[in-house]
Length: 152
Image (cartoon, rainbow, N blue to C red; front, side):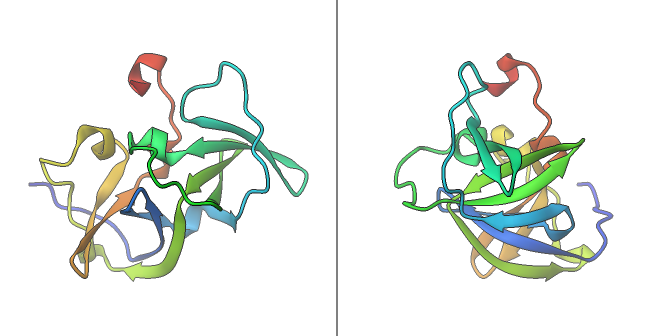
């Protein structure tokens, strides 16, 4: 089993399809409720479209699609986490935004061997939280889009 080398950090908890995820606060620029998302023809399946956030064009990423989570019971008003990577701004579409948690280095366990591969490739580890497991997201990997075959 690998040992982690994480420094203490703050994470925003988000829910997608009933699963709890943690996103490092250090990479978040905005948390907002998108007004309208415009579809983009021929875009990757996980790209919901684009939206206007204070004059900037933001690519909306559907995390339900990215994580292969069923489309059942989508919230009426989804939330978005604004992140900038390599000069591009993304809005990670989530069902709910929760609280901010401070996690120490020892609070994050390595991915279990039985973690679904679709999630493991985006996970930086797992945190146990009051009977639930929070998947700690690696945002760089989450926003690295390979070939279309990788999306399947």
